[in-house]
Image 1 (cartoon, rainbow over the protein chains, first blue to last red):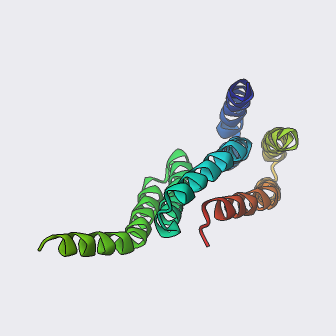
Image 2 (image 1 turned 180 degrees about the vertical axis):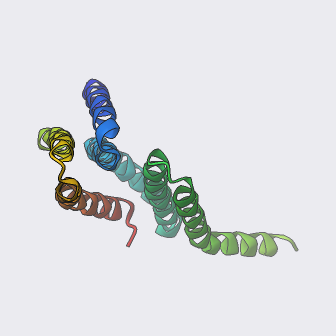
Length: 128
Length: 67
């Protein structure tokens, strides 16, 4: 099972990160960054198959592709923003982390506006 | 997967070497060289990490269709 590998890599990397952080705080951040990357790359194949299944279901129900792609985009933005914010928080830079999260929220809001507009149109048309 | 895990150990090794070099240089009285080795260590690791980060962003871009 992959979960064992992931947990093993995580624990070993944590121990190394602490070891290096005591001597050189700058390099400690690199280790946690690289570990986060490795675990994500390890999982990305599974995530890809889940997304494929979602696409097939969407085609079957024949809802148009805009909604699903917007959802995927939002999930992508949320993931990257959270990844960056977490790295900054670990390094002790709370201010930068909150700014990254703020920017992520705004970008997601911008992404969601078209859907909100279409929803409003739908509601307005329904009311006689 | 395996190739990447070596990177963690490489970075940890560089970190420890830089730390030890720093101590040695400090006790030898050469503060500037100590600072220089720290900078060199950070830049070398930065070079290695930047490729990984661009790779990560590329993967996320293609996967979530974040063009």
